[in-house]
Image (cartoon, rainbow, N blue to C red):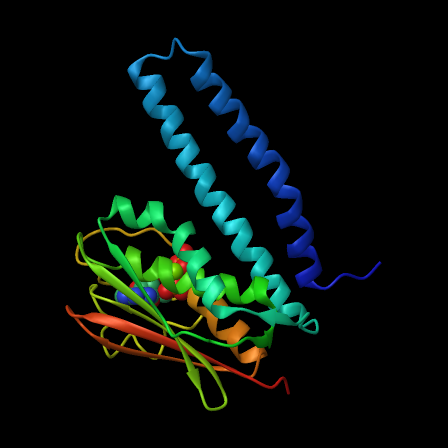
Length: 228
Ligand SMILES: Nc1ncnc2c1ncn2[C@@H]1O[C@H](COP(=O)(O)OP(=O)(O)OP(=O)(O)O)[C@@H](O)[C@H]1O
Ligand SMILES: [Mg+2]
């Protein structure tokens, strides 16, 4: 049987899910079983944290292999306003930990676009989690959804560290991470924005960025109202 690399990656990534969640389950059982001393508790927390990073990487690999397999989109009625509201709930805990406030600015009567909602939700989640991760403690994030003549635009604006002009042309490349994160090491695989761009362009939409170092960043994407 002949397999392409995307099939191999997708099979391995799927197969990794089971052992990862098994190890995670056993560590959690060990914690609730009790009698761990302080050091053991600390080690098990670190192990869980690493497993969470592995899960994130596996999820990213599955998204990448889906992009490279170039399968046709499975379009549905994509309710961008609903996806934004749901994504805001999913990132609420991350925002709380960084004391970041999320503001939703959703125009009334935003219509639907023909798109694969599951993928568009990943796009919104990627942009919102970046806006929180690369924000300052106590910062803000504004997410807006607006009707445009030919489609719908979503923008995600933050009060974060910003992106240097020399980094801006590269941030949508796979594995690219800007070097300066204000001394703080922020975790990531450098794949999120490459997935954002690929998914939006597969829908014949557009994505753009504007940023001022030390002030903040705005990402916008637009999806057409009519499927090509
Ligand atoms: N809102 C933002 N503000 C400042 N810098 C950003 C922002 N979003 C992205 N960046 C920069 O662009 C880089 C690429 O972003 P991308 O989302 O692709 O990767 P990541 O966040 O590092 O990892 P992950 O794959 O987990 O998303 C980041 O490492 C960061 O340097
Ligand atoms: Mg990211």
